[in-house]
Image (cartoon, rainbow, N blue to C red; front, side):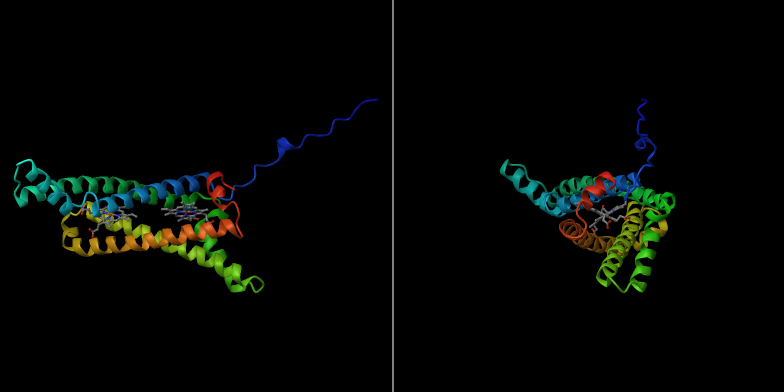
Amino acid sequence: MAIIEPVREEAELPHPKKKYSATLRLWHWANAIVITGSLLTVLSNSTITNGRKVSSLVQNELQHSGVTLTNDQARQAGHALSDSVWDVHVYFGYCLAGLLLFRLILEFFQLADQKFIRQLKKAYACFKSTKADRELAIHELTVKIIYSIFYLLLIIMVVTGLSLAFEDVAFLKPMRHTVKDVHGFCMYLILAFIVVHLAGVFLAERKRSKGIVSDMINGG
Ligand code: HEM
Ligand code: HEM
């Protein structure tokens, strides 16, 4: 008697759609690394490589060895070091500008239901119509609004950062101080976003969305 083999169907199963596309994950982690690098350069220049601190340190150290530097010479030495750290900041800045462009282009090529704008609209529609799970609807909308604010801040940082990097362009010169103030102030908002984001992800991982961090690594 002939034995009928069961039909193997696994090979024909469609690939499950990932929650986060590979390109979004790549962007997310590259963005996190570049922003962290950029923040570290700011931290360095306000502590270890701070121009004023370095100049008085160099002046004092050389004085012990019998070399006297004028205040101007010491200031130049200090500034040279902090300027080279600012150069690194600007390289990170160019990478961040590239990543922002990449994120904007990605938004057009994402699958329809993975587009950020669409998810934001969906969260708003749910918030308006859902009566059953109000808490979840409010939470989803709040998270998306916080991401929207972050994207807006990123645009401001890149535009102001590039204007500082190209300050020699005539029409940008008179705005330098204001632009620098906006750029410096928005850093605190970015820091606030990072704190809220990390706390949110940590709580989500412990409560409703277990595995959310590994989803951001392997796609979900
Ligand atoms: C400088 C640091 C970081 C920045 C600026 C940042 C930014 C972002 C942004 C903008 C999104 C939304 C992406 C989108 O849907 O368009 C996001 C999502 C996410 N991030 Fe981060 N992130 C950072 C660090 C981290 C770290 C360290 C972790 C993990 C420990 C993490 C875990 C996640 C997860 C799990 C999501 C998806 C959450 C969701 O679906 O709402 N992020 N991040
Ligand atoms: C999240 C990202 C960024 C953070 C947190 C950040 C933070 C800062 C801070 C705090 C300063 C000092 C402002 C002051 O002295 O008042 C600064 C200066 C500067 N940033 Fe950024 N920045 C970021 C992105 C960028 C980008 C995208 C660029 C574009 C290339 C850029 C270019 C510059 C330049 C040219 C300066 C002036 C440096 C100098 O004084 O020689 N930054 N940044």
